[in-house]
Image (cartoon, rainbow, N blue to C red; front, side):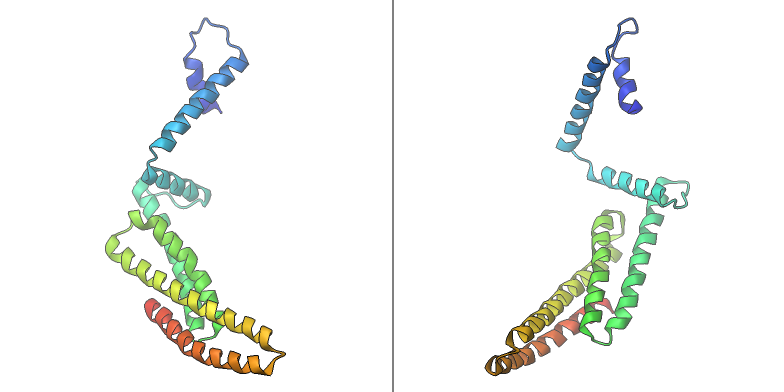
Length: 191
């Protein structure tokens, strides 16, 4: 709060007697004005840099000489960590098990969000193709998960009726080809 109080104190002449409620009102007013000014014209890149600097400090990352290098090292470290997690899930998903494909999708989402967040700081020639591949895979794996979940629900609903079981088996056959197609789309995008 000293960052807010000291500038406010300087507005009063040294000879004036201050009352805490008046000072508090002045500080609150200045803070609100500054917040309103920031919200009406936000500098998103600057806000992003400040957030990354804070996270860098919180994680006690090694701080190189220049701010940009600090941010770059942070971004590289975070993306590499997320890529390793995805690669591990990718190797398991090659077997084609629906649960492994779902775990791959879960691992891909943080990478997708990180790429979106860091996009302005990374070279577009490298970032956009990776982002497009991740997005394609996430969407395809989402369809795989939806089809698998629909199959589980239908199996539960049709367990007591043989006519419905026949219809469910027919639908499962139709869905299996589409599920396999989407699985291939996802894994090919990440290759």
